[in-house]
Length: 433
Length: 154
Image (tube, each protein chain N blue to C red):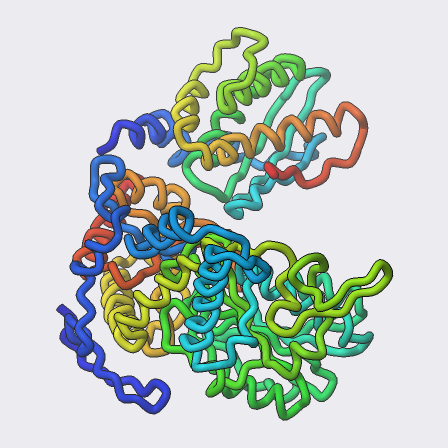
């Protein structure tokens, strides 16, 4: 299918890329069988789900874990003195350990459950930002941030008098690091950027940027919502201080997000929310805080979804994240090539699949992204159209919106053929040629 | 091709999309307004020349999808020459048709009836309403002697 042979170096491991099947043998047709929703018929066609950057589908094991929790283990966590409470607590904490292991064997105390990546970033903005920033301090972001990693900092800068600076992007959709030494200054207290762009697919050189940030005494927060589901991620190697991501973009349920925070920094931070679970001792007029990670988890948490998320992590671990990355890199290279063959299509972001993940934004010169998405939906193909929660980036790219196809473990080359074929069909439908 | 798709992209709609009406910029229009749909980034520019209580001429330019462009084009076609009171009744009727609201007057909507197909695509209703929301806001500002500001479908 894909004749080119490429090699990529990732974390010092040489990965063969470019054959139909990844060396580790990830078989999307077998995987498909684990996802009940993928056999749905949409508008008379078998569903081709290419909106994985928005949320992924869920395998049977995750769905049954959710059901099993409510049928067999349901209880409140941490305080109960009965069997169910102990089992629920063990299952809830087991997922925390799996998350810690999944992102490079960090400590479980450094893993905080939130609702989603957005809440994880807001936690840092509230608990760290409001106590550590003063006027003239600098927060460095990039031009490719999702609103989740932009709006909290706009608000924080307004409240504290800190200034925002942006690392620009170049014509290929890569970060332009030429003036990085001037942008990340000694006044910089935080560098917050996406590990992988949800619009451009770009994988940023986060370890290099973290080194520069730390050299200037700044902390580094990474938005990993698009990276953790698709790449092997090792937070220790990157040396990030904070790392945020969401379970639902990696086969897990909605309503669970993760904040990784470096232990020494989390220790010094004030809680985000106050109430039960997060206290150590409470008197009528004062309270002391619980230890990590529970200091940041006020109230009854989302136990069931956290437990089911553990099954999603097991599923991905069994596949192997190197194999996941390899499969998606093949799909991405193939899709970029097939889309490029259509003269009317303009693709945003890097064209080298080694520099990017499988979220491909594009526009057709004549067909509006909404019309294209509606047309593809009539063929059972789900893509995204809009500004992808990145309006400043849209303005930077000079478009109001784009169409976006994004891949995951269950997508096949044949589906990309159908997707590209349907775009050609949409042109016959909408454009007089 | 699916029936719902063809019900959305009817021939009349596609004709307005490919050859939008009201494309001539106006000289000294009484109303000059912008509309936007933040959800999808669509933008619209509208100018209206008013003569007494009538719409003498209208200019609509929409950077958007087939639904928003054609809706704006049909708007330009139907309101030209109408009294402001009639224009408002038409706008109310279009909104009622698109959102399933209460129909107050029975009005002959002509080409506009093809927009009924949009109802089956809930996220596209705002596309169809963009030009109408801009029109209604523009007329309200004009009648109250206010500066027009950007109209948003949000």
